Length: 179
Length: 157
Image 1 (cartoon, rainbow over the protein chains, first blue to last red):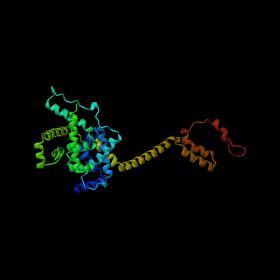
Image 2: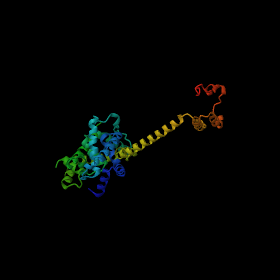
Image 3: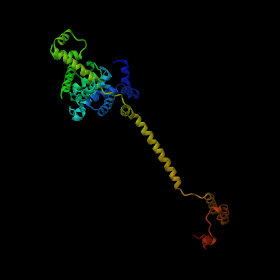
Image 4: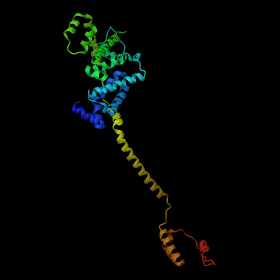
């Protein structure tokens, strides 16, 4: 474990206010972003992000330093998200009101508007992916994690994480093509 | 190498080995799908929600993992303050409920003790004199019955 991270972990164990504050400031945004992708809404994501930080601080003595704190944080968040999705009996379909209209082929809006619509549509389709694929895509595209880090966060083999990524993109593409 | 292998490698791995390059060059379907998936990746990247760590998230986390100990101390201080306030209020209330004692009362009480010791009405009247204005006015006939000596040498009353 790097020295600075080791010192940070010691401070977190002591529940040092400054260390906890730095933790939330460093990873709060990316954690909420990841959980928004996983859960489909920001309010639940913020609640779960809070729970993730609390779990990390409460169980920081279990952190062995084999991966980075960030990876460990995403691992906790991913497990919490899966539990949340299972317990809340969330469906993986989006409701019609969440689904943006497909851009009409002609006469079309400007190219920029079309790109924005595509972005909104693909984001709305994310919850339709199986959770494992969704997690890989969000960690890769929105968090810029390497496949090694993704594999560590999700307790997968690196090759499996890569395969999930490819199939996730292919599934999204097919969903985009549906009328 | 299958199409899926080639696409997975092209999307998820770094530099493409010659084998993957060769496959993509020869397989039009894969080349076209790779372009489409790259565009989708770009769309997805631009769809990333923009979240900064909110102050409320920070406060909520701190209150759950750091504050409890300090909260304990705060509760103790609050309890001590409450106890002190209660003690002061009780003391003040007790004092305000006590009947007012005329200024003359302590001196008269001393004089009364002197009278009993000396058995002298004159001494009582002398002691009463300076405080007469402070005390309720009583007509002599109202108390004469009490002041008249009895046959047994005592006082009525």
